[in-house]
Image 1 (tube, rainbow, N blue to C red):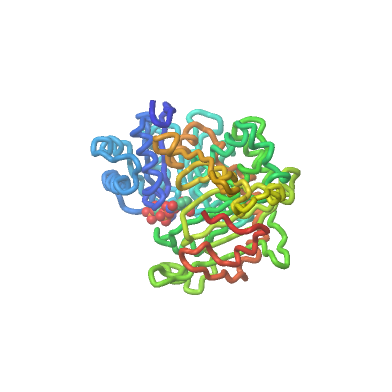
Image 2: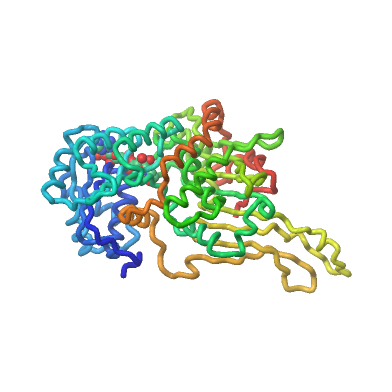
Length: 497
Ligand SMILES: NC(=O)c1ccc[n+]([C@@H]2O[C@H](COP(=O)([O-])OP(=O)(O)OC[C@H]3O[C@@H](n4cnc5c(N)ncnc54)[C@H](OP(=O)(O)O)[C@@H]3O)[C@@H](O)[C@H]2O)c1
């Protein structure tokens, strides 16, 4: 049995559009190599790389071998590399050129390629329409619920706003059934994210306190220390932190941590519950002392460039590299509980976590303790906080207050923790490995449905409307973003641990 504890026996062809790009090299090919080496997929598979650059099969194989040596988490040995390469081929063509698809179709028709097909669109959204139209016109898309099957994986960003997301959905749904479309959000492939639902609904002790009576606020942070190192300046300058991170990853985390118990664990039930949260989710009102939105942009220092000085970024760019929002969920469970979202580049620490902060206990109980000369240090009494750490050091931690052994009454905050590395020695699968396996199994639970993506864009419509005029606040690299972001909070401060 493989480390994945599943093996997909169905033969399949992966057609990767955008096969010479960054995502293919860093994530997709390494994920496929691991699945192959671990025996999680059948030997009867083919990978067809589709892009414009000039390669033949052996040149493409060489390019992918280099990518694997650089990025694979699974050790690369020459024997398996050779075996893996025997499954790869390259199909040169322009995705918007109908003629480029005929050769591909012929290979399926003469049984050179396994008939089940997974088209992975690792391309920018502007190419999706012509790619899908051409797949349809070339007869490469089989009927829904039929054998052989056709599935299409679509990368983020899924549109730039509500209108473009709706247009993209119209195009996809005019040629494919919703069950054939897999809109990927790789955050959902991470172990701790999947564990949120098990943790909440497979235990009795947490769910009764997951509501407005006990929870003071929820903070969701996705902080990165990197800037534009990966050469994504042009893309990021057009996108910004809100579109890149909030309207997909952070909203999806928010949904999982606040949704009602689903009536089952299949895709439909979970997505229905997430949709209810998204319908109730809105940007909180700004008050005189507490804005609801803060946009920042990293400045430079002696060692690192300011965002405006990065390669392929406009020198006057107003694009935000930091976004913080105060949201509210207008439903019975969460009314009145602020949900703070924060994400940014060049911040103090690389971390993604959800912190559910509970209300403070009635401290007056402790204040009446007679200390008789001893110092009663009660400053350590902190609100209980439940932390889902998504990356790095995946795990779940509960902060509680406890008395330190001492003659004095000294209360400290201590952690009850469950970390994956402590409990299970084995390395966690990469999110793309998990999600590719799910797409092969036809399980769309961890992918985003059309109505979800549209609802996500609808929630930020008001923020996007004002974004062009908003001058981002410059923050120091290595900080936690602009100080102004602290003013969003009705509580003591962001959890910067
Ligand atoms: N890179 C990441 O870490 C990452 C993370 C999350 C999501 N994504 C998303 O994944 C997608 C791909 O990102 P990427 O970083 O891999 O982009 P990239 O490095 O710019 O690669 C784009 C790919 O598309 C191909 N391409 C462009 N125009 C084409 C055309 N007309 N016909 C055929 N092929 C064409 C390019 O190959 P040729 O030049 O050879 O044609 C190249 O292989 C984007 O939607 C991005 O937002 C990327």
